[in-house]
Image: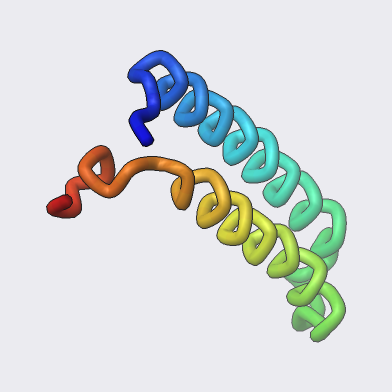
Length: 77
């Protein structure tokens, strides 16, 4: 089952856009949740809130890149 080069490029572009948006959301959320971290230590809930987005990014990355053929990712066929 061959995937066209155009489809691979669109998938790659979609992943990069999703990753960039989620990364910016993670930074904004971290800044909002940890607004007083200079004077107080972070709580477990604060760390978990920011870490949840990181886990979601890894799941999205795995889902998108599992669709790429192995030869595209540098693995031998």
